[in-house]
Image (tube, rainbow, N blue to C red; front, side, top):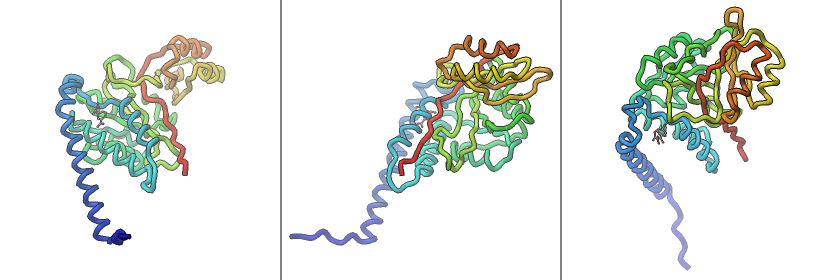
Length: 277
Ligand SMILES: C=C(O[C@@H]1C=C(C(=O)O)C=C[C@H]1O)C(=O)O
């Protein structure tokens, strides 16, 4: 009986070299698709190549099929960089961040989700981020979701058909020990045909807070994501299931003295990942 030769370090390293060359080859092959894809997506016309629904779906499938020694954090960050950079080569963009709640967490989030090739531009408040995105062809903006009432009605400038809209909530894969886990909203100029509408966001203005309001919204799969004083009124950022008709949201807010209700974006449903190990 012939025995297999013992595996040497040199053998294992040549296996690794073979795999690395294959992975690099596949990445270069992936990039060849982009030229045709630009023509099909008409990216130059729409300004932005970002397709958040497709990305959320890809990240979810990645997490579901992942197994073995390699941490999910690593795989997720590698794919985020691949996807964000491939989007960048279709149409260059920058990521503008509101760092009023601290630079480190926003920088970690931007680098994790968009890599280092995509420029990271800091701003001292949300208004400046929204203005920068509005002035650009296809840039993105990010804000912490937990800015708190002192940040004011930061979502106000998203109101209006031509104004930037919320297009994603990051991270796509949620878990308690996420290495860049600060929950952020991501904005872009309106994506028209490309928006994913599993969760729809509304800017609302009511006369006063009422507990009934929270209960009414919950009955229609909706919740208050942020709130802040707006003169003598109260401004709310409401997140609702895309299945909930706008009239149901309107009725839930009516008892609080609803003054205004406007859609300001939408994003993919949250995907919470539980490790099986
Ligand atoms: C390639 C596309 O464009 C972007 C880049 C993606 C990728 O590299 O996989 C995925 C979605 C888009 O944000 C696409 O629309 O499929």
